[in-house]
Length: 281
Image (cartoon, rainbow, N blue to C red):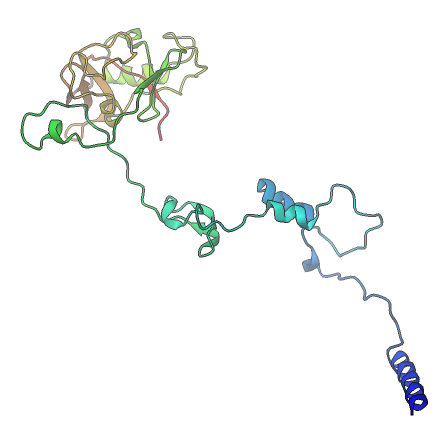
């Protein structure tokens, strides 16, 4: 019985071998242009630097030499790939509306679009004295000022750390002038003039709009109405032009009075001071 089983098994192996015998060469390479593909190096660079990469064009051809040392292993690629982070990973409500980001949480994995509403912060006025119950001096609502409020950059400019706006330090560089002259003088300001060594060029500076100039005002102070310890030189307790035009009469420009914290509009042919600015959103 054992001998019969051995013979049968041998014939079965021969039968299988004969049944599958034939052409054992690999199929012909694909010639469809759609077969173009990225290299592993491209995938690695995408994770590493965000590079777009480019697909290999033309039909597939077998390599004539061994892979070079610049190739990437799957382990190297995995080490660059992001991984889920449900503790610190951002979700749509964390990112500004319309901005794209790569979500790392398991619930929001992959490319996402932010939905967060980011309101513009309103700073405190600086007024600390109260004149009636629940007035500004009592509630002191608004975002707390940066400390220090200003940074003297040592190049003729001053940065307001509240807004990030950059102001000319030496305000006494300019005298009183008309609105049109003020717009032009600010726009033509450049490094080498008015004590500037910041490398700025004509066109970098401008006349601030009324909101920007108001952001400097300390409503708890007068003559001038600027925060205590400000580094500006030559500030007049007088009217300063803004680039904003009055809506009731376009022949009038909006003005801030640095002496008494008042704002109004005056004829653009009048002569007032200017406070040049650069930067901003």
